[in-house]
Length: 158
Image (cartoon, rainbow, N blue to C red; front, side, top):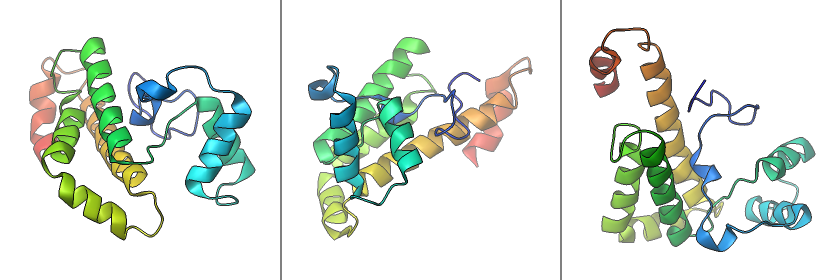
């Protein structure tokens, strides 16, 4: 299935920006510590035990602030560049989302301060991630074509 993750909560998943951990979390974290971090991020009792267990197992990182979110987007772009083509179609959305944050930081800080859940950056990365998954699903439909990029281009442009 490649990068496609129709439902990232179901294994095997595809690619997700939440796999990309900021440098300070690159080292191994104890399972219990990861569980506590996720619980505190989403609020105690907000996630079911099953969901919490799945997220702990997947070792995903959910950004707490602007800097973590932008770093995760850049890491996702770098990883896709390594796996596909540098600054290619697969990574373009992640690079664009990171650039948007860098150039429009004030708007992001304002949106974050107005978000009552405290999960604005998780929501933003989820939006970018879902956009990437839509791209993968659309592109996959044309995988058997002689020129899948040209065939998919019209649909992907909207």
